[in-house]
Image 1 (cartoon, rainbow, N blue to C red):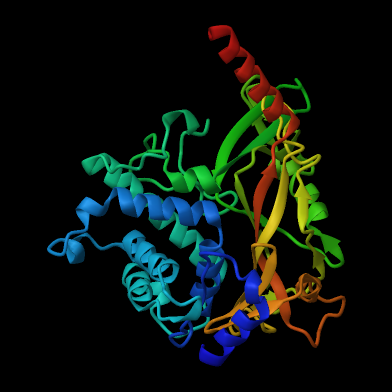
Image 2: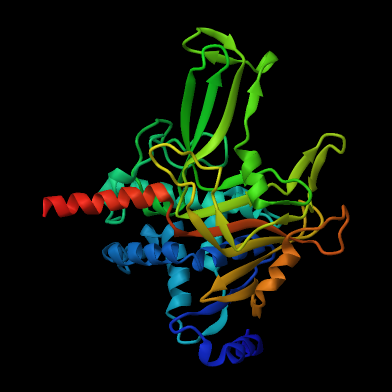
Length: 402
């Protein structure tokens, strides 16, 4: 990245963040889907910090004699991030060869040179990391010191791969999982509320998630997409609900609410839709506005855990470039220390925040600009009213004890 790196350092000058590193990642033919997600995760500070903490805590397992045998996707990722973080240079290019090789070894879907989906890769990566941490915890008591049984979700299962899918199952047996630091950062809880229209009984079913996959419409916004996600749906005709109290199929209303939002809220926009008339998937270039600051007003449940006023700040956008689902390119727009940066494999450059409007989408069906926001990363910056009240009650209880 020689001259490009020098250009970035010159642009930042004395404002170059102390201790920070901005490195591009080499593309091995079609690995932009991987590079774009890795950049978003590297600048997800809670994730980076916990990854380094995990690596340091497990250093005793990484002796020279054991390094090859103990290597897994988690250690490969930690090595890659440490290589960037500990570099004497402020900018440059790193080849994530070992990490990519491990990904291809674990998942044959990523072995070829076809265009891959960044969202599918993100889901695969997070679930694989969880699986490694859970196995280490059960086999040798891995020092995952950030985990706590009190943080386990009421659903009693690890995060699902996507909305509506079942949580991972270990060795074909359902069991209460170890709550890892990956869960603590990314996992949220949805509650599926169904109300029988005959007896008015309400049935709640919780499920966990690592990201929210949202249907999109033309000239919409993230807020409107979230409201549609939690809108009420009537179940009737062939879709009637079996009510346990009525002991029969009944008409009902159901809705999905966010019971507990995660610390890092990942939003996936469903830009690839299967069109029956065409017999294939089509990319939706719809204009979907996403704010720099996001509140979960009217989409979070308002029970004992009130998260409705929790505030989030956007720090990363994975962008799909191209007109179709089977070809194209991925880049990342990342916020780091108040600066927005453009990551395109080996290239890293500064970009003005106003340029994010260019990836909202288009009002035309066949746009000239094919850069569209695909995966959004928001970090919690303010807790909801209910959380603040509960925290205040905890402080008062401490005072009573003292």
